[in-house]
Length: 166
Length: 314
Figure 1 (cartoon, rainbow over the protein chains, first blue to last red):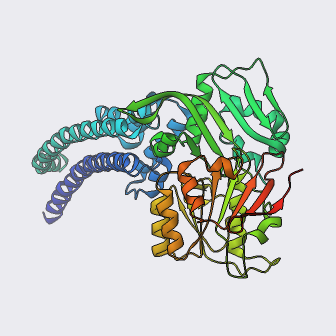
Figure 2 (cartoon, chains in turn blue, orange):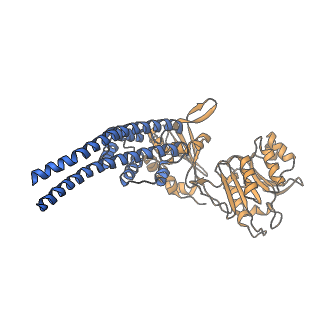
Figure 3 (cartoon, each protein chain N blue to C red):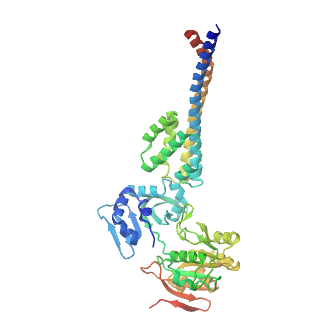
């Protein structure tokens, strides 16, 4: 009897962990979105007010996530090679797993960065940052709703799985 | 005479680089300017002559834009201040003059909407070009004469003053001069050719450089905080300069600076320079002349005794 109870509890815990993993991956995506938005704001201030070049800004920024760093490195490459935003957009999606509308706003930066003077660049980057923030907020709300739902059903799914298996 | 061809080639867009690299050895040895214009072939000025490279290959706007992107490291906003002055200083100390459609905000020049021509002025160091004339700059092993270097455009005033700065800073042996602290007020970033915070030209071991600093502020700041024996600056001749020079001399700091002109009388046509010269602010005047050499001294005046002490005329 005690063995069955232990397996029952273990199954519930395992299912809970699976749901926790799903929730964590959603949080990670939000964290990457937040970092990319912060980088864009940093890019705006250091480009337009401190008159620094993209290379200098990239070297100076303290990246927390390697994925975001990779995306920013690719941005410099895209600017140098003038490859445009289409390839870049695909790359962001593959590396960050962030939503398309968010990626699209960031990818637009390669279309105007480096060829405009700071007052215009300031306005354009500010607009991009706002759009990225809006998109992030939307995703954050849907992520927290998903998380609540997952937390609620995880116990139920766990019990159900355990009952079916045992 | 030192210039690394790579520092020039890496600034150019692919097409232009291919054209220019055909003459890279000659350019490395003798080129003064590389001129790039939309709808024109690449034009190169050498010390003695000038040539159009590949007459049929006319440059497109894309070629110029590509070069601009490389020069500004895809960050034109970072070079706005320089663009407003009409040129960008790049690694190696080379200077790129710009031309195109201008944008104004009110009366203020803001930049170029389209850049259609580039003039790459190749920077070269000529260490020792002032060597034979250093004796005219010092009165004893520690003292320096206030000196005005006069010359027409392209006569090598900046090259000359850079070498003078390096020698006064390091000291020299014939006649013996110990060397002293020098402040260089490099208003247009030409003397030391600072790029990315690093002087691209040697200006001496005891030299402090204030780059892209207004002359007036530069003089006041350096006298207060850097306590130089001498201040070296480029191109005197504006309204504020009388007061600035007077302040420096009152503070016991010597001045070595340049002015545009063919002769002393020519310089006096500028009313601000006239009052500076008539008030005997300078002890010596070195007159340069245009020549095939990097710098050529025509005459040196002792302004206190009103006497020519060196002449190369005739």
